[in-house]
Amino acid sequence: MLEAGAGLGEAGADTLLPACTGLHTIGARLLLEDRLGVPVVDPVLAAGLMASYARRR
Image (cartoon, rainbow, N blue to C red; front, top):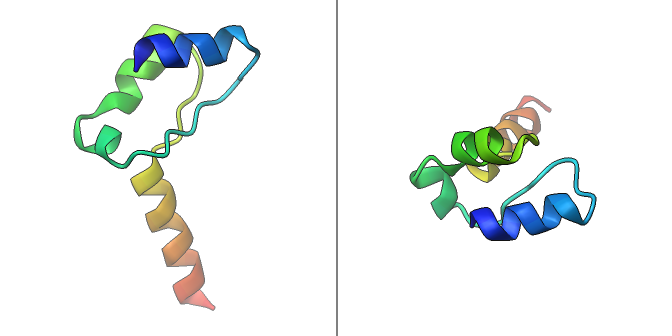
């Protein structure tokens, strides 16, 4: 996970968006942000936020 994220950062990524919700379960977002120094979007929190916006319509 860290190696893959580091590779993406070296390739120019300025934000990471993991597709695996299991990374939310193990709390990987903070680890990745701390180690790699780039923002990481939590897929579970992002999906919940989008669902809350959709519900308000």
